Image (tube, rainbow, N blue to C red; front, side, top):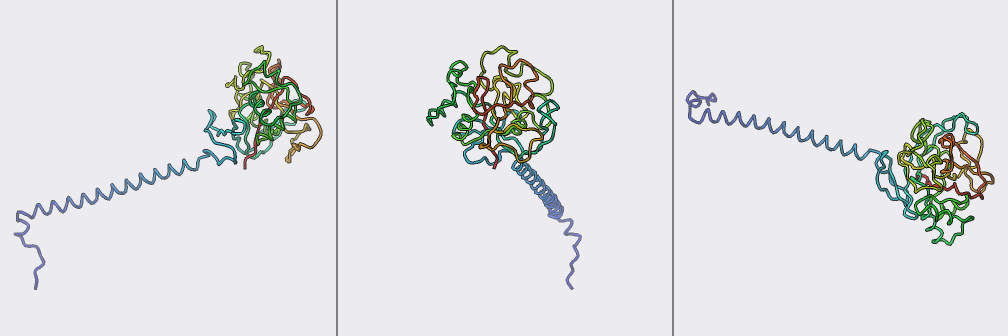
Length: 305
């Protein structure tokens, strides 16, 4: 019968302790390698999770055809340039907001849900409107050039009718905002009175209190930006919207059909206004679409796909 037990002499051989130590080291090395492998696997999983998280953040939604993503503004919202006219558009997210106030012609205060849309960061400038007229041969209804010569290339274009604004938008592949879109872009979702908050601060806008005799270059008061980063939604110039004037609550189907006759809504206050109550985000005026005045311009918008 074969003896399978270890003989005493073998454990005392010069190779015995060394071999035992080697075996122990191999076991320790194997355990270390196993833990190292587990650590590497865990680290890889954490890196992968971080990459997935970054990939699912609301970074830059795929822009509609013709728009180019250029980054995020100081408020964290995506901005896109429209190459046709150079307008920079801010993506306003979908969701409800508080529209109106308890003031006459602004009530009742009510909640309105809007899908996501793009709103211009600033009003259309004199140089942009000049580019449009040169490219198309369009003749505006009023003498906007005289005002442009006084206020400069980068000031908002004024002395334009609603129809002039609509034609510009058609050329640029854009549109006017509805008054609901305009108000949300100006005040955010919390129902604030002014774009910057609920307290009046005349240093945050272009108005008669700062004594200008004409509009200033767009974006001249960055501290007055809206929660989404839109500039000059209070002051500088009044702005055409696409909406027909009507009573509140604002209808879910809107009232922006261009073929319908009636006064269109104007928003925003102007450099000629001298009272704080003229510059609230909910303030609305009505003007016949053919009327062009020196304190009124427009900004562009676009629907999200």
